[in-house]
Length: 420
View 1 (cartoon, one colour):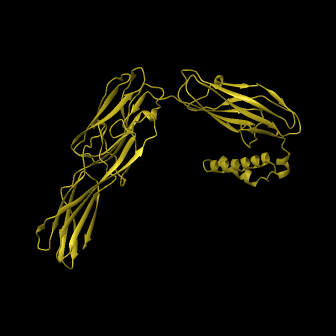
View 2 (tube, helix red, strand yellow; view 1 turned 30 degrees about the vertical axis):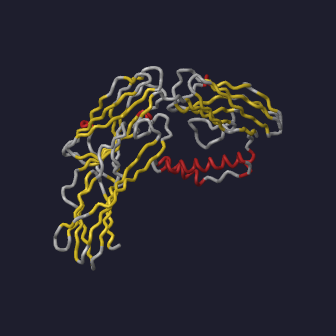
View 3 (cartoon, one colour; view 1 turned 90 degrees about the horizontal axis):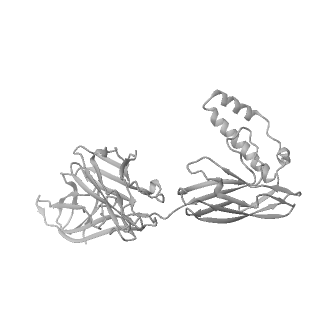
């Protein structure tokens, strides 16, 4: 079976399954599916007899990336593997979508050709976009013949056999750089918090901004599914109307957490940057707030000693509860622990802090729209910080009680080492 017959057979099979699936929604669909399933298969010799022109297109797809006002070219070679002369005439076919390619942007030379048996010809595809072209991804087909792949039912768009898939990406370097791609923090009910987003204008003209609050319907949290928190009315945004050329501006976010708020809030700030190079999702700053209350009672862990030995206790904050770091690199809050150790006589024994370890995770942002730094001008973005404290005490036989009251952390781990 030649490759064209194989493609047709595969499409017929997929069409049958599509109708079977549609049959679950209507009786008429089920009847059509029954007829298709009960119909005799198409003989292989009939598939092989389908008269498709044998053309080889190389490459089969092209990707052109340019900025508004730019032009670029690519070449495609059509080889005639048939035993007769074939006439080809490239035709630009566009599809509906968010970004529709204007066929006037594409020029193909020559506009037609007769390729003798065994011969080949090179076409030049020139893409030229205007200065006011919208940034985005565009796609189209360049069909070199009008031959279509047959299907058992009507298609909204023809499937051309001899076509090149063309992708055109129009991009532009953003003038506004965003220091903070996200704000993630744990907030206590009834308290107020301030956050900052620094914007830097690297262009030669002022750029307007209009930050607005948006909300994502998302029920996840750092520890699994959590109820959503209603925070829209608790968040206030203050920002300048524009960022002057070569300067920076600060978007201030004030959060007054309601006293009865709980759960996990997922939202975003659409900065409303008046720069066509910044696409909608690139001009957003994610907001992720875990709303909670500081515990008032300590966690208690009981353990036993059989002889007098040293006791080593290690307490580490949850790595996921990373403290917010503002554009000046200042950490607003750090995890803390109130730790006590009760000996078998019920007396609070003294704990000696012997070591404090601070661990973090850092990545290097690759997005040119993000300054990605804890200092606002660095290439580094610190994702999370973990604090680990180590204490020691002299133990004696009996039952001991470790009490831990955490602060500014949604979780912690402990370790008790008995003996050297």
